[in-house]
Amino acid sequence: MILEIKEISRHFGGLAALSGVSFALEPGEILGLIGPNGAGKTTLFNVITGFLPPTYGSIIFHGEDITGLRPDQVARKGLVRTFQSTNLFQHKTVLENLIIAYHLQVQSGFWGLLVNSARAKADEEAARKGSLEILEYMSLTDLKDEMAHNLPHGHQRALGVAIALSARPKLMLLDEPLTGMNPEESRRFIELIRGLRGRGISLMVVEHDMKAIMGLSHRIVVLNYGRKIAEGTPQEVQSNQQVIEAYLGSETGT
Image 1 (tube, rainbow, N blue to C red):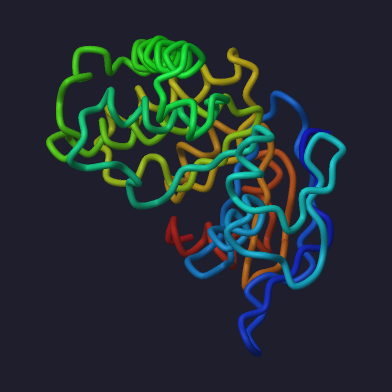
Image 2: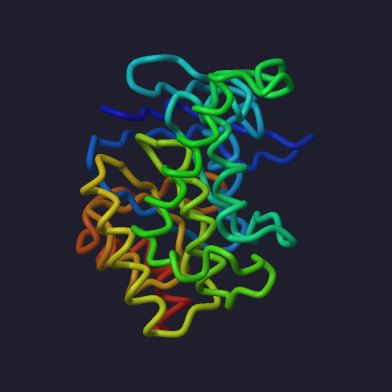
């Protein structure tokens, strides 16, 4: 297993946003995470990636207990996420956004950068080269000198994923990556997501587009009111009566 979620609960005062959620993710798998608004999906992402500590439970990544680590420590281990709202340096260029993110991996440190050491120069060149490679993969090379705030919504989403890729992830958590995209943008983006597996990246995806998530995922986990109510293949989940009542029925009108 690349990731094991064990009895995760998260309370805010007297409110249980998550209650005893458990599941696991296989290497190379695309796992969909669905549920109605307020089901706890984003809270779970925040707990897994260290932005919130769990009230109870543990998170095991590559056999190591990472419960309670800071987000930067989690990311350095190869577990990164994107956000619902684009998390960009809006007044930097596309390439500058990637280079800034790439410095998460830089080893020369503050003093090396300050004195412009040989190691710092090598790190800077590696950051630029790696950033250009990611932009090429994400089909953003032609936009490398464009300010992030000038990008169309779909390209901003793609840049958000490119920034996550700069951390060299083993597991990437995508939070509603298709929001605001037209059908053609969604189709292209789904192909990019599938292609990430070829780079050795496992994926967990929160997405409200039911057709997209069912076609993309190998397995689906369903949350409702902070509890896991179903887990299985897309076909199994679609025929689960609890899921139909809690979520799919309200979305499809059935």
